[in-house]
Image (cartoon, rainbow, N blue to C red; front, side):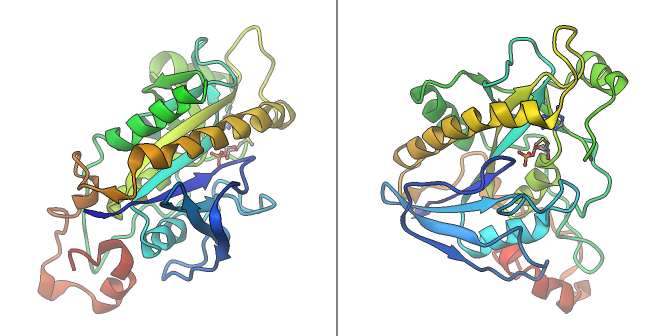
Length: 290
Ligand SMILES: CSC[C@H]1O[C@H](OP(=O)(O)O)[C@H](O)[C@@H]1O
Ligand SMILES: Nc1ncnc2[nH]cnc12
């Protein structure tokens, strides 16, 4: 058994969480640069918690420029075991309406201007991503969400676009009609990939703010409408988070889906060929297997 430490990465509109005991904003330095902001640490119902505002307080980082590697490394360095992303998203499905939450279980990664791996020349590794989110952690999010009275859709494919502009109508239709995407956002990739490389359980709560641009009865997506829905979504998100400690508990068994052992068979570079400088940067992320 190891100690549970739950991190929430708060997306647009979520810049802090309340109710933490012994709350303290801490600065974490990483070999991958500075995280989006300080990290709020504390406890909730006897379970250790951490909160990181993805875009920084005051929303300073664009989706492209969020320091994804520093964020995941910093959470790992703090001893986090489970990461929950709370994100604003557009919906491609009529029944996934603004105000609803989707517990995402698949991704299509259309981003192209981000660092997507901790590994590379000097230490090559390939993790599996067939199931990119953790079912155990997703179960807890679903249960906590339903208990909070939120309309939850379990399962959905999140298309991660580069942004920062929203999609054209043609793109929106293509993602919805031909690619099978259910929701769209700009941040869950490469975050989910990096969480897997860092052997962290990762669940994604996509909080629907709009119907993107495909819906004939809804106008084009714009930030003002998104923010109006976001405020209500953020309140619901806080209620969901409060239910998680009781469901996950202060101690955890190994992940039944293997998220915390993702690197067991991933390293390809022969030990004698690994670059010591590269390995030094991997101390938190891959220390368990190096
Ligand atoms: C505010 S609209 C677009 C913006 O909101 C979402 O951010 P996050 O995923 O961090 O909640 C979306 O991905 C875009 O970055
Ligand atoms: N329609 C949309 N497209 C991309 N990111 C979003 N975030 C919220 N709504 C979005």
